[in-house]
Length: 357
Image (cartoon, rainbow, N blue to C red; front, side):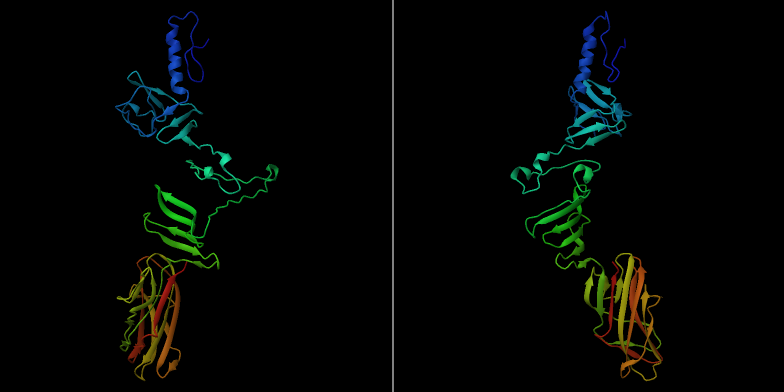
C-alpha cells in the first residue's frame, strides 16, 4: 500500500500505525489550504513581515529572500513559518488584490474570465437591472458566428446604439488606463478617429461626415501662402521670394517670417507655386522659378521658365512637384532673372502644399 495519495501527496494512515492523529491532522492541514484556495496577492516579492496565520500568496517571478527560486509556488503562513505547495495543472485560486480567479496551466498562472450573466442580455430595450454593464479581464477574446448547423447564417453583426446624436458611441483605447485613441461617434453623428499623446489633449486624425460620406484629415499638414509686396529681383541672381502672408496654415507648417515651409513629419508632399513676374528691362532674356530644399538643393522637376507674357512684360510661371521629405526639411520658392532686373508681383504670387494622406 502506498504511503501517500498520488495527486496531492496526502499521507495515508498505515495499518497498525501509532499516533494516527498526526497523519490525519497533516492531511486536514493540507486540505485547509487547497480547498477553495484564496491568495492575498500574486505580486508580493518578499514574505511580508506582518503575515498572519493562514495568509497565502502566489510567489511572483522576481521574488527575493526566502521566496527566491520558488516562482508560481503557493506560500502559506502556518505556525510562524512559511510552507510551500507546488501547483499542478488545473489548480485554481482566487486572488484578492485582482478580484479574479487564476488557473495554473502547467507553466503559468493565468486569469480566468468571469462568467457573464446571460440573463441580463436581450435584443430589446435595456431595463434598469441591465444598465450596470460588465467588465472582463482576459488575454484574448473571440466573437464567433453561428453556422447553419447551429441555427445561424455564419454571419456576425455587432450593434452599438445611442439615444441621440449628441451622445457618445464608440471604442476607447487606453494605455495604463489613460485614453490614447477614440473610434466612433462622439458628441455628434460624425464618425471620427481621435488620438491623444497624454490623455488630456485630443486631435481628430480622421473624420467622416455621416450625411455626405466626405472624408477629412483635419490634422494633415497643409498651407497656402502669398507675398503682399513687390519683390525686386536683381539680374542674374537667385532670390528667395518673400512669401510673408498665409491664407491657411494647418499645423503651423509655413513660417511666414522665414518665407519657407517646414515638413512637420516625414512623408510624401505635394508642393506648388504660381509666380507672376514683371520684366523691368526689355533686355531680360529669361525668367525662371524653382523650389529649393533646405535652401540650397533644387527640388527635381520644380524648375519652370517663362512661356509667353500674360501682358506687357508680365509672365506667369507655375510649378507642381511631388516629393518625399524628412521631418524638419525646409522648402522655399526662389526666382531668377537673366540679363535684366525683374519684380515679383504682389498678391498674385502663391506658394502652397500639403502632405499626401
